[in-house]
Length: 67
Image 1 (cartoon, rainbow, N blue to C red):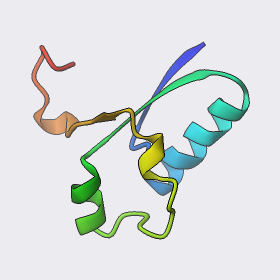
Image 2 (cartoon, helix red, strand yellow):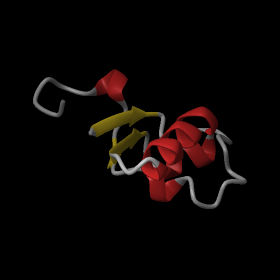
Image 3 (cartoon, rainbow, N blue to C red):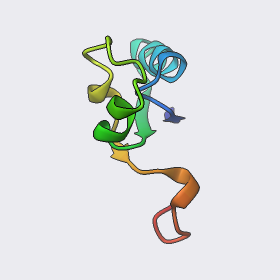
Image 4 (tube, one colour):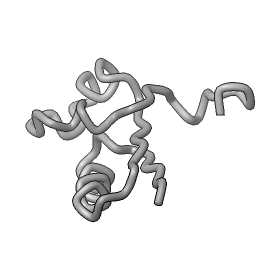
């Protein structure tokens, strides 16, 4: 199954992402840019957080074409 996780670099989104990957699903992770979530201090101690993000975008500012 293909699964999309928003907030994939975050604490909860990252856990959900890893769980679905472990189950063998095709997971697409979406989160803000690496620089934005580091600047905000989000989940900065998790060194693998960035690797969970397939698409970097702020969904609050995404156009219909981007989605």
